[in-house]
Image 1 (cartoon, helix red, strand yellow):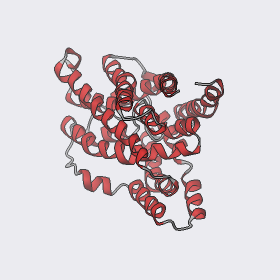
Image 2 (cartoon, helix red, strand yellow; image 1 turned 90 degrees about the horizontal axis):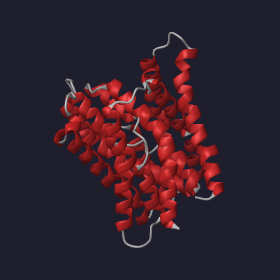
Image 3 (spheres, helix red, strand yellow; image 1 turned 30 degrees about the horizontal axis):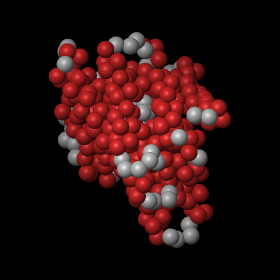
Image 4 (cartoon, one colour; image 1 turned 60 degrees about the horizontal axis):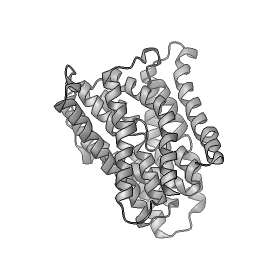
Length: 318
């Protein structure tokens, strides 16, 4: 990694990420009496129903679609499945899972397998690869992370949680507004219609998505109770070390040289824990406190491990 890229990564990506997350953590102290859960829920609904669909529409409409682009969701999807499998193996076939409740085990599997591929991935990959890198996190999210989270992820939460829900992956997935925004964007992209002003307007309207969700991440992390424990070590080892290592192996096994989309796929696999895990934990009765704890440590550790994996990927690609 060149000194110029390292400086851009620090100033354009890691510093803004850290400031937004820190703002979310500090805000409740400034605004005493507010409900963190209520505020988090309202922001999530606003992003899910308006800002994110706009951003996904713009990304789908402006992306250059080619077969090599599919390497990103392929690598991320396989690495995610491997991460979930490793977590299940560690929790059910080794002493690491001894004494843990079913909700805690479900939480560990979800936090170990699903990464923040959009809200961390977008600023990181646009810094590393420039404007063309903006398409990678959206395709990774729509074709790998979101389908897996709302199928296998929901199944894990359903089986391990304490709830009265009856999960239906297809109906839930099809009701997600970002899915329709992304589909509409791809339709515009493939149609060839001259809708550049509309696409730019949608991108501008959707621009608050990433800052708001990073702010929500800061709200979610239990800053007053960041004591590491066994569950944290299990999840972090799989999510931040083994998953990107497996993704790198998959990328290197693909025919030809290590391509830019393959690099992006490895970096997406190295992202810290997905914010959506908290929503799944709330909805299906998993251990929300443990989810927040792991998410906090994963985010803090990810600020260190992500540059490491970037150096590794760039070193192998050069």
